[in-house]
Image (cartoon, rainbow, N blue to C red; front, top):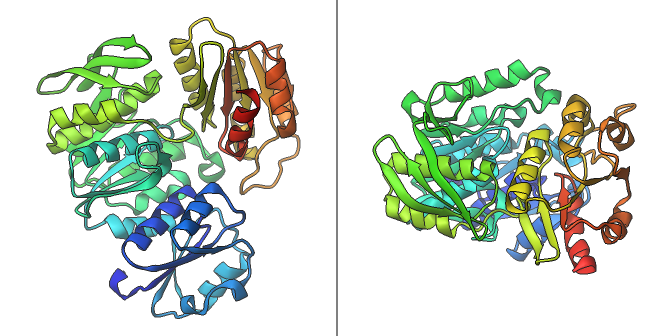
Length: 447
């Protein structure tokens, strides 16, 4: 597609984290941008602040006439949008160029040197670290991210166009639209079984993704994954590994073993072994490309994190409040590991909002195990997102599978009162639904 002939880009689902990054990108390149979303959010408010017109009712009459020219308008939609959406149906039936988000991202990046970050967990943090490292190195690059970075307060980092950094999303097999020149796979745990049906089909899609690399020596793989590539991990047998790890005042201090040398005196501030692994592969990809290791060391030390990824909202000697996007059992366990590493022996209260009926059903036993690790657990009702309810799949049902005796299902309005009744020092909110919208209220009430 020739983007030069496109003057208007209309987004259906503009408030999505990946969609909003594309909207910001096209706005940066001088296009006329507008869109629809179901509800106003912090993201849509920020987009509106850039001069982007957004409405919240599915009504063709609310679309500005300038976006109804088939020759000059591109329509981008998220696969989360239902097929019966009136605006989407209008654009399709009237011959507009209508493309999924992943397809557009693939078209934008196909003529760049594309760094692609894949994996069922760790994509957003790893790609955000990598984007930051390249920005610190003053690379001619643009990074499209699946989260809001604390360093840039955005999900888009723009410093040029020769190199791109993208999240390679396995949902809906979106990552097969990309043309990666260098890639990593952080994990391949079963997920999105509503799309794939079986775990081996998900694994096959990662193999298909890895085969899109023209140079197979540019694939970085977490140790123990069933893929061939440059390995990384805490294991000294890996091609890239972290060594001599120490924690000082909540910061990791370590060395990195590369295939060429030992890189000394590296610092990284995000807690948890999973984040240490994310930092390692971001460093490894940038190092392999040829960026200056001294600048990469500076970049790791200055990376502040991603919103809703182990984000501190209160950090006192007597009370700590952390919010995290974790929505899969493996991610929840990783958060637990990070907290217990940083705060050994302290009582932890977790408030979890399950995300999707299908995911809750598919991984109920694993959710029960991961959640039961916390000293106290409160479950909110399942956040449906794009799904209709599944009979019998409820938070009460999940609660019954947990072995923790200090557990209950609560409403959102009860979160603050439950926290105030708890004697836990560490308060944790987790989930990928709308629980994040409660965080500022919780902070204000318990601080």
